[in-house]
Amino acid sequence: LFRKPFDGGKRTMDHGSQQPQTQQMPGPFPGFAGPQGPYPGQHPSLEIATLGPQVCTYSGLQNDREYKRLERELTRLLLEGRPELQQARKRAAGEVEGLLRYLEGNATHPSRLAIEELTQEAQNLLNEGVVGPFRQGQAQDAFEISEELVEAVQDVAMRMAQVKTGGSVPLRKARYKALTRICAVQEILEGRVRTHMLALPLSDETHEAVQRINQVMAQ
Image 1 (cartoon, rainbow, N blue to C red):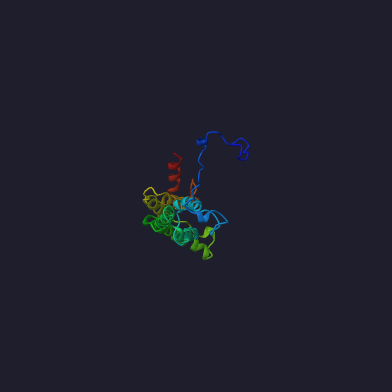
Image 2 (cartoon, rainbow, N blue to C red; image 1 turned 90 degrees about the horizontal axis):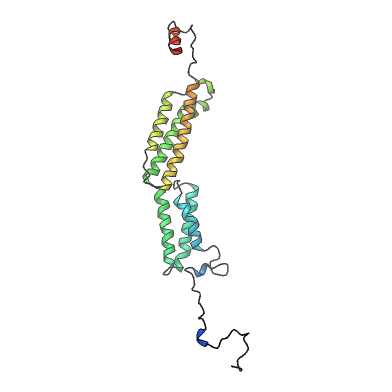
């Protein structure tokens, strides 16, 4: 005992009470441990955790800039991780592939395409009934918003509300955004139509029956 170097009193007489040292196991992606590793940057699991909610709430189409960004990031993770995939790492690759399928499936879903088609239909109605006359140089008071245009936009809004989403968050989000815009345009058009209605009481010089109409409206 006296031949051993002094350890500050940490060593006890009971040699069996020494606790075994815990060995830290490497993570599923040891290559991404940090700047010292061969793949410096953020850990893939953290990137997947960040991109996952963005994919699950994405409501656009395949030609949108945000879709291309998400697809590019997921593809990069998939290609960077595949040479290092073994055992637990395969789960991360499966998650990336699942996010890619989910992203593409929502962007090409029949309901999402129907929402885009109805949105374009409403845009065409506005181009023909409102934007076109302005581009032709007509003044704001030179034309009236027809009731047919208001009814056509209302019909688009009703069909938009009937699009089935199946409980999908991205599809519900896309339908809500499109329906909100169409309803806002419809409200503006209806207000425009009301401004062109004749004010009561009507002038008695218009027709001999106008006086009777004014009396009935007053009652």
